[in-house]
Image 1: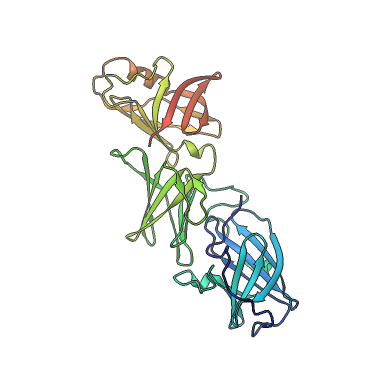
Image 2: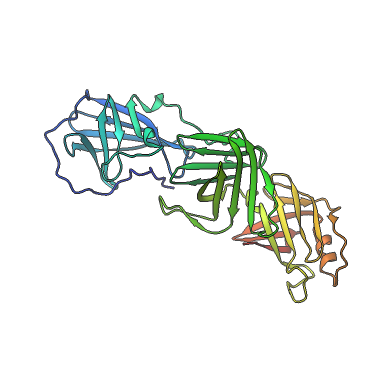
Length: 357
């Protein structure tokens, strides 16, 4: 996967080259390093070495995504009296300004980056190995990725949800908050998953919708549209589940079942619904007649329903409710196929659900 360096993966800019100039205040060879923002990772560890013969070497590590060090080299030149440019084979130019013994990374028009994140584009004398790289908010090599990750731009933010440990939210250069994730009922809109956490900075609310989303900074597509609300401010972005088990989280509509062909004529509430909340291990839903709730457990391959559902007591016509309750007991292997969830016994599909949108 190719990751995106915010603002500074550059196109061309029409200017003449000042080949005879040298940047003031730089003693060659000179190496600068810093942690700069990233649209779809925790941050980019960036190192740049400039040689007096006007060659450069660039190193990058996408923290929280990979430990691989990416290398690139080429020629540098002075764009004007104050701006230094790297000539990059595949990405056009990258621009810097020397100031106060540091290098300031500029935007694609060779202008200063402004706003809350401006200070994150300062490179200081030093090497990549001297940087302390922030890991993923939750993840580690031992525990693996969080169950769910999301990010957005303008301003740049990251969200991670681990169903066992809670939610973490970071606005780049501004704040980081965390709290236990609690699912909020959304009866009027079962296709939306809402989580809430109480943090030291106020109530953190997260809304997940299984609607395709495109990151406007790099064009990458994600299966989930995300909104985060904190202190009256809305952060919009895209996200995805990171493992097979996590993708079962949320609302499902029963499409077919052994003993029921999926016909909806005469159903009181439409197709039966199933909501799996991996944060609490509670399932709930309706049979198209009565509401139910109970527990469940899930691994990467097996989902188990212990039975003994708590249910409302409305009289229901037909056999669909009895059949649904009967099937929501015992152990199943499960398979995810695009937006469908299949529950199998002895290799045969017993129930097929489709993601509610």
